[in-house]
Every structure is written in C-alpha cells, then in structure tokens.
Length: 195
Image (cartoon, rainbow, N blue to C red; front, side, top):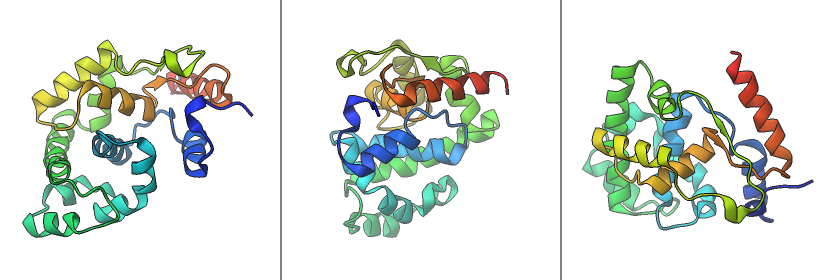
C-alpha cells in the first residue's frame, strides 16, 4: 500500500495519515483543535505534538474554546507544570487569546468554519504532487490567511503554520498522487461539492 513519504514507520503517524490528514473538516471544535495544535508545533516536529495530542485534549478541556478563553493565571501555572504538553508560556498564552478571538469570529460569522473556508473560496484544492519535495511550505492563500488571522488577533499563525493547518483540515489535498489516500480524499471533496 503506497503512502505519502512523510508517513514513515511510526504507527501513530501512519494512523494520522490514513484517517485524518487531508480530510475536509467543517466542525468548529476540530478546526480550533488543529489551529491550536499547529501553533503548538512551531519550532518542533508534528510527531512531537501528535504524541502529546491526548494530553493536550485533557489539559485544554477537549479544546472547548469557551473554557479556554476563561483560563486564568492559576490555570496557566497548572499548564506550565504539565509534563504531557509543551510547556511554553507564549504558546499557552496564545492559545487563550486565540480562543477569545475564535469566539469573536464565531459570533460575527455564525461559525468559524464559514470564516476559515473563505480563504479557498469554500472548496478544497486538489494538488498533484509526485514527490514529497514538491509540496510547498506556504502559498498565496496561506499568506492571505495568516495576514487576516493576525489582523483578527490570532498568534502563532504564520503562513507556514497556516499551510500546515490547511493540509491537515483538507482545505488542500496534498497527498502524493501515488498515495492510496489521494483518490479517497478526492472522492470526499467531490461529495462535498454536491452537499
């Protein structure tokens, strides 16, 4: 079974590749989770965050934005003492601020999904990459998304982070064309066009 080269041998990575990466996500809670986790990844590898994902879900109230938006200094200290997550004050503080901004956008747009999908005109982009080296680290769309999110008040949303987010939540299908998931994701995208 052919997979994208980056999936490697780690069973956690393979499961993530086979079941989640590139699947179009419209659920606000899951979009928020990915946005926060991609920000937590800054300067680290995705596998580091993936291994801590369950700890993050426990520590951050299952990524309930309303709860996170209300975290106080006591909660921040508790998170900084939690060995199950990356204990970085700036990233933790950013997650709290991002939750507040996320709620503001939900209120303004009806939901976050509507806001975030507008950056690709509400339709997943299907790419045709042959080699892992072909994949870009950022695009004009991720540049635009990053700029808009920063303007809204989000932190840890540089263009590279935004593009990784776009890949994760299926805004782009960046599976290599010989990967078994490439066609499966394309079928999901087609189905979404008709929903």
